[in-house]
Length: 91
Image (cartoon, rainbow, N blue to C red):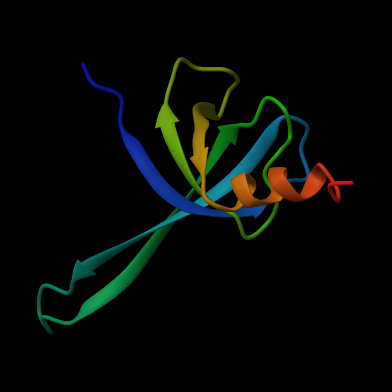
């Protein structure tokens, strides 16, 4: 069975090796036919504590790591640019 992949924004990085990711989805209201935003928060495993609040990440379903953590961070847009900044100026 393929693993589910979701994209969301990191809203908390306070726990060790864990980030909380908010995933937004648009659903149509059954009566008014207007699109509304629904969101859900997932605890995802971040082995090296790379991700910070506001980063846009993709999370993938994995084996249960703890009671409420069965997702892992697999890709991020903002961390790639941040990793380049950590190397410092080239001399």
